[in-house]
Amino acid sequence: MSNRHEEPVLVTRSTMPPLEEYVELLKPIWDSAWLTNMGAYHEAFKEQLKTRFKAENLELFVNGHMALELTLQALELSGEVITTPFSFASTTHAIVRNGLTPVFCDINDRDYTMDVDQIESRITERTSAIVPVHVYGNLCDVDGIQRLADKYGLKVIYDAAHAFGEERDGVGVGQFGDASMFSFHATKVFHSIEGGAVVFRDRGLADRLYQLKNFGITGYESVEYVGANGKMNEFQAAMGLCNLRHVDEAIARRKALTERYREQLSGVEGIRLCPEDPRVRSNYAYMPVVFDGYGADRDTIFAALKEHNIFARKYFYPCINSYECYRDRFDDSETPVAKRIASQVLTLPLYPDLPEDVVDEICQVILQFR
Ligand code: T4K
Image (tube, rainbow, N blue to C red; front, top):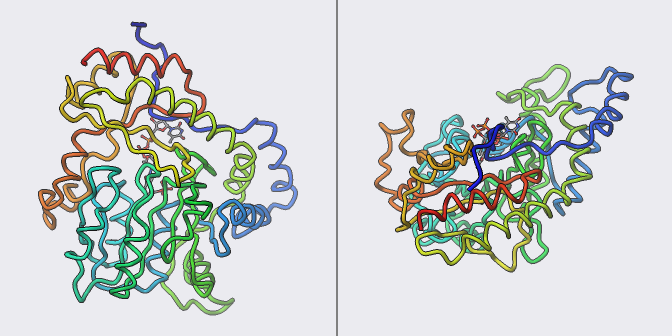
């Protein structure tokens, strides 16, 4: 097996457009001295994304978290919101920072999205919404979730941070539910340095989202809502416009690397990979592997890779309902599948510039414990 890498191999590495392309877009920003507050690039980026997402209604934000937090505010939710503990901190924080009570529903053991069969038992007369997560880009059971939402009159807001550009049977993933939040953080399949967007069903939400990301200002002399600063600036939008030109190439490369991992790791006893859904056009965002009854546990594999200067990540460990800031209020034993998967999962390095022989090396390190 090869030796330790000089440079660390990290779980991801931002995709960078050719520098000249970005520099070219900076010139008009300098000339106009218009840097932020919904400038020309902001508008151009928004229009291109609408086409890309096959979405009629879309609003841009400074990051994915603000997009989610302000969408929950715009929908004027109250009481309890059902969500998953198997996600990044942002999902639950957005709920709590709106003064809402998160109610955790367990995940399924197959693709780690919310277990639809358990949602109904979490619904009370105080429930106003469901916030599921398309975790790793795995699509939730959107039909099952919508059936329940319709039955009980609940809003559905997807955390689609990982699901850039995904489609099911040709339908953009943002078309499901009342709204979907996408993250364009530097670590994502597609990025605008930091950034995010919300795709939403009700056109009437557009003004409210716009106002809330601009301090709740509704006119030159009126501020009707307690908003925040959630505006995407022109440098972010310019990066987004550049990266949009190259994102298909980047996804194709991710696909090839994912297939290389799968060829070596699938069918190995004790190693579980996410199922592939033939209806879904995947973006190959992450490479999660679950070690369940394998020759070594997750932490041993993590340490063995680290010896090679390879840094996989334990996305998403620990579960949100066991965070220090939440553990007094919640009990992670109430979501046993999420708790177990969080202790067994490792997200392997995956990004377009990752050399194939590093994928092979990672697989060798893992397979030595077979
Ligand atoms: N919902 C979900 C389900 C999410 O996963 C996220 C974000 C959100 C909501 C919120 O969306 P945003 O508000 O972030 O748009 C990273 C990202 O910061 C975070 O955006 C992402 N999820 C989460 C899954 O991963 P960390 O704390 O793991 O990041 P960090 O700094 O350790 O970076 C990971 C690796 O990425 C580094 O080892 C190297 C590489 N990297 C990082 C940065 C910052 C780069 O190559 N370039 C960079 O600029 O959270």
